[in-house]
Length: 337
Image: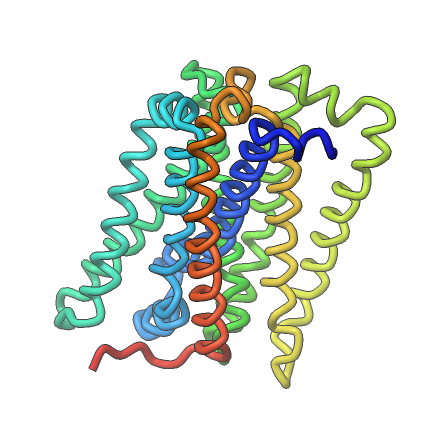
């Protein structure tokens, strides 16, 4: 360990890989639930849609900041990987950007639109959320398949696109359990009960596919003593799924206690899944092609970028925490008056 940190060509790529991973993880959790709220739009009444939008109103644009930060780190710290990944994923990235723009525009316009036009903007918000979720799931699947476009890899990526969208809708439903009350909260509990199966199937599919695609990943998980040391990870996963099933059966409670439990447990599940993927693919940033050390910029450049990151990252983190603290509690009516 000491040898790594005495050599900037070793610890700087590792540091930026950790920062990029942290940004992606925070983005998936935070934007995951607000994308999920958009995916659930067709199942809600008009008045409920207003309250659903109000629940994510103070956060949704700040959540997307983490995606910008992750892509920025990939560009400046790992330029060779940036070119390889975005070249392979050009089409789903373009669809994701169109979806994000459609979401942003419809989010703002639906609040001011006349009643006759509000349905169209609600539909646009749902379509933008679906485009973003599906494209991100497709990119995840293709990344696991080594960024290769074949019938088999596209089929798997399509499957992960559906499962990630269901997973986003699940964490979105658990967010609504936490942030709403009354009939909408009860409906969100029912959405969660349905969505949990998609979450289980999605995480299971990714967990099975990753070692089967790569002998290197298979050896990392199923050699001795790794298989023993890593056993707590799937055990914690099963424990959390069981906790979610039991918790959702008892919600909502009369005094609204434990409304936070499904959302908190889902965040931990997302974190476990992320660390499983990170462990599987390390040290590769482009699967089986480029390691973080081969793709990294020169240590001198990384050192300068690190100085800027030391100021930018805490500012974004502080703003994110502050917004969630200020707007804690149940969602109230969203108004731009």
